[in-house]
Length: 255
Length: 337
Image (tube, rainbow over all chains, first blue to last red; front, top):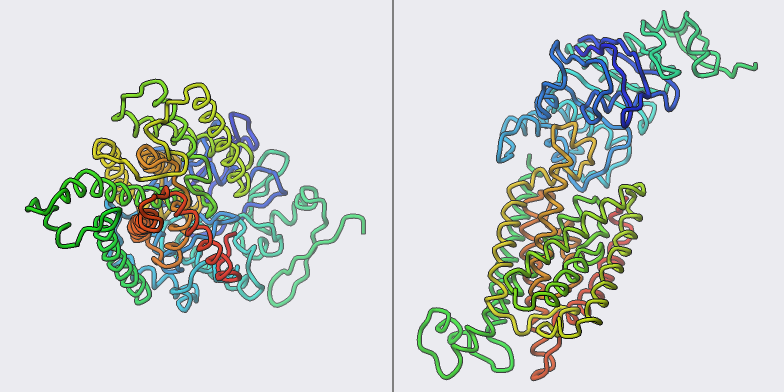
């Protein structure tokens, strides 16, 4: 569980996002939603310890997050960046590096690391990619390899920035299943998404940002009925009941 | 699992092949020159046995230091190039491209002008110049958005500045490089163990450190945010690696001058043929660089004997076309973005 208490984040002492009180509970999916530039990515960087926080506290499993060493933190919080670099490595070697936080010096991977890697690749249906070089894979295949890397890292919190960016529809559905599976394993899954429809369907709770603050946090139902998505994004969100669940869509506000 | 093993076997085979080639070329380099010496006599004189005439003197005072210098310079420049390319995440970067050699060259010239006798200080001066160039380039490119293009462009700019400063020093103190007539081209003529010893220490230490931290180096290639989220102290590792690559390039420049191309071509070849492990790549770059420089130096001695070309000319004459060949052959294969 990660708790944010009166948190303000930003660059060089200037707050981009302030006064955030938010909890990412275990075994659930939290989606961070908000327009471009609202400070979601800054919040992610601060969570990862790559930016100093301006004020407030971050509690990771009850203890101050800055008390953790970098590798301890990596054992608890895995991260998928929005625009990841493509290294000259095979998929298998890439996933293997997910085990880096568990290595002692001199950084030699052990047998159990290799078997965890194979399990992780199988879990995302990418076992056949293991020998392929990352630059030769398609965008969707690379993303699946990166999911496997997150699994191999075996952290109890997973933070993903726009994970469905490179995925075909089929793999977007696959991704939803994977995210749910991670939550069912007891992990706290935190997603930054731009796809409102996916967010509404997938989230257990939605944290809605705008205007340099956390506007509200609640279930998709609560967020929808509050009508605040409409005002934040400048669209009008609507839904129909089909296939046993609400299907969301949006229109421009003038219509 | 199977794939990784296959890769590592391929890597080990390559290292073995390169190692044998390096040993052979070193032996060749001891045999060939203005006076040819038979391999048997070379070995005898290396072991301190009796050999005819001035052979022992030629070997001990001329050929052996020269061969060692080739091996060391090749290793240092190639590994320096590989590390710089990984850290800056840019296959176009190389010590001579981004101004590292020029920075080292400037401080060497400066030292020669100010303190002509201080030979033992040369590697350290070269290191300081190389480091200044590396830090300057990475700082400028980060300020200007750290794209791959701005990095190379700022390297070219820094390189120009240091070359101009070098020219200025030579203009005011024309005698400063008298001991190094071929400094700007890169050459192995007239090298003594006195020049080599301090540089060899620096190179050995830097190589060992790079190998110890090779997995960290590999992690950097995942991109800084991913590497950081895996618990790597990206800034510290990046800094350490840049310092080490500057030390390598600086040490090499201190005795062989501004030798180009090795740092660009060898890492480029090894990236595709040595597999993916950073440690294996570093070792094969070291061996490949040593091999390439030694062979070029042999050619530069033998081709127009008794005249001698500076090895730098040979390197560019062979390295340039070979690099172009590699680029065109690989068209459409690997992409770099």
